[in-house]
Amino acid sequence: MALYSEKVMDHFRNPRNVGVIEDADGVGEVGNAKCGDIMKIYLKIEKDVISDVKFETFGCGSAIASSSMATELIKGKPLSEALELTNKAVAEALDGLPAYKMHCSVLAEEAIKRAILDYYQKHDLPYNEAVFADVLHEEE
Ligand code: FES
Image (cartoon, rainbow, N blue to C red; front, side, top):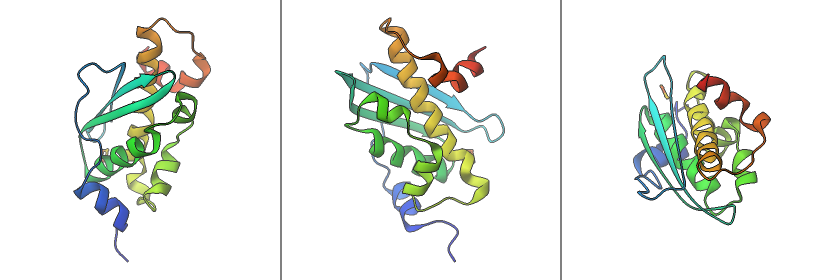
């Protein structure tokens, strides 16, 4: 059996939504201290809906495929739905990742959360701290 699914290979070879949004409404950057990989997500938000999303990932193939799939999953979606996206859902949408590569999909979940938190903070909007507990905790 191949180590990586066709979908992982497709999103790795032809990643969707690569790039930068210069006037992004929210930006989230996360890294994994162990592997050193970094992921940055840019969001354009209109009326609580993600109208555009781009990413830059300096990382492994699974991280690139996870970023690509995650951006596809949240594009055009309300923020509330994007906040519910788990790394498991990203991995499932890719038809699975090897167990030791699951942490790559965690970067996608966290980068999206951080970007949305950045949007709320920059615009002085109220937010539920419990939803951002993981990423807020890391900032301490
Ligand atoms: Fe670090 Fe994949 S090995 S994100």
